[in-house]
Amino acid sequence: MDIRPVVLITGALTGIGRATAIAFAREKVRVVVSGRRVEEGRQLADELRALGTEAQFVQSDVRFEDDIRELIDRTVAQFGRLDIAVNAAGTEGEWSPVTEQTPERYAAVFDTNVLGTLLAMKHELRVMAPQGSGSIVNISSTMGSRGAAGASLYVASKHAVEGLTKSAALEAAAFGVRVNAVAPGPVETAMLNRLTTTNERKAALVAGLPLKRAGTPEELAEAIVFVASSRASFMTGEILRVNGGKTAS
Image 1 (cartoon, rainbow, N blue to C red):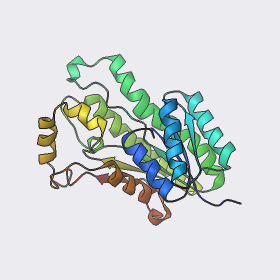
Image 2 (image 1 turned 120 degrees about the horizontal axis):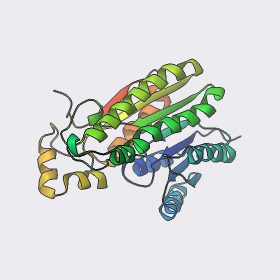
Image 3 (image 1 turned 90 degrees about the vertical axis):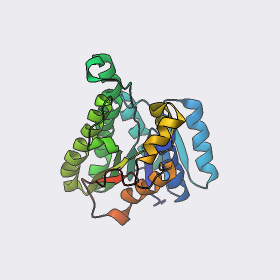
Image 4 (image 1 turned 90 degrees about the horizontal axis):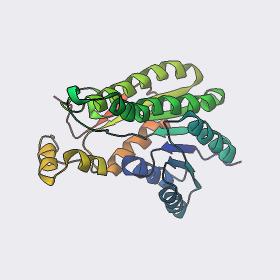
């Protein structure tokens, strides 16, 4: 019987999610990666297999419960269990003042960041609770604990992710399942480039960090792997902030 842990990652095709999939593959665990783009997903699964682990891609969109249900069911059908889930699917939405926000923009952000996280945990816990074990890591943000002008919907969604994380942790503890979140600061991803729009603006943002640089997806992946692992076995309901000192003062 194969006793290697089974890891599921949503939002695995880019940025932090992709780096996390690679980090877990190097640990030689079994990995299921999920996202909306089929070709990129298959290529990532091939890359993970080349690192010497079992890997599978399942197309899914976290905004839809049927997709999430099928994702979890296919994971269990393939590997027999689910030990770790990283809910990395997210979007920054369209940033603008509160007075310019619309119900459509709200839905575009909250359906992915909040509803997607909720549905993922619902079905992950459906499997983990009967097992009596498991670890879930949600992805928040520095903005999950503070405000940011022009980013009201994204900020609110990440506050919600942290609230969901803490509430789910209290419920899941009775079943031996841990639920935590990792909250990145500025990280060198396509999302950061979209948000800052120019090299000058990105440089100004990074200059405000105590460490004077943006993080890398790989650094965030290492933090996620740690929080998910048995090395953090007494941690649940916590938000690990990995942001170059941004929230130190």
